[in-house]
Image 1 (cartoon, rainbow, N blue to C red):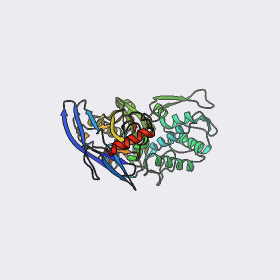
Image 2 (image 1 turned 30 degrees about the vertical axis):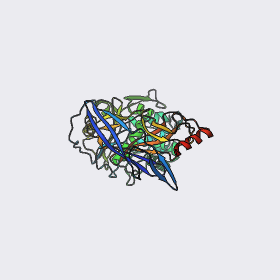
Image 3 (image 1 turned 90 degrees about the horizontal axis):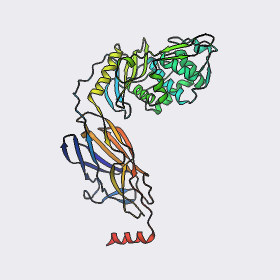
Image 4 (image 1 turned 90 degrees about the vertical axis):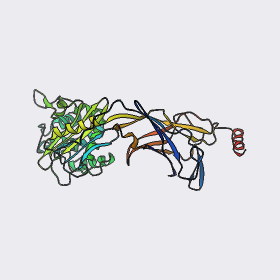
Length: 424
């Protein structure tokens, strides 16, 4: 059943287990009854030891959650896919909804270019003019036919990179932003690490085969999720057709999007295809419905499009996005030192939601990480801790815990009176 934990910054914890669950027509009412890890009586002052100090913590307002389910989804069998590795996850929380060999290191072909595009966008230099080198113009594989000495804006190269999978565009971007392909590849790997993709290594910006160039389905999904959080990337990835200049020609280059998912699947938003003989067919996809985005990845997938649709169908048909904590919802009460009020309520600084099956709410666990000491004055909205949400062992969301109201600092006489009241 749902569990709650209060963890103070000194690493001690107070845990909560369900007190009762009442089944309502449209959802559940869940209340948690305190179980104190150190000696104390549930519902009253609980003493938590922090180093050489002792601190009293009053749990005044216990977490109450109202989970409303808007309908039941018919359960489906896990998808059967041809891909060597596959995954579908929630873009916001990164909760994995289905996976197959998701942590196996494999080549990823031109899905590499998702990271190349991320670095180009995050550089903030899309209006810069790039001169194409001879090396870039001669790179093998798919291309937009760049010529040595030709100039393009970084934005034009970005469209050539994503829509037509131009290896020449990838090298031109890499040389401009990194100084060389090798240095840019190091930048790509470092950015992947920052995004949590720790089993990924880049050796080039385009994805042509190299034995030290690899990712996992999980890592690529993390990279794709970040890419889809960037407005410019979403714009480019969803563009059906784009014209860019062609130096020395009386007409423009016409770049048509190779991503067939945009026409095949309801809510499809992107993002990138890939193929080499060692990697096989690879694809990272994204689709949104009612504001909820899923990310799918298939590596070495003979039936790439069919696999992708099965993964997305599985996610949308078996899960629904549910708000489990509302912004401003009061969650816990703590003592305040030197304040005109002795206690203060902490509320969620923002709403928290995640994809859940209809019967999964009971597996959620909440952990409150609260500042060891709260001392007045306290501003309304001041962050005093963090709410962590776990599904089983997986950390799926967090939100700031903020003061629900202001507390002014008390004067000496007020503090003396409070002290005497505690004595008597």
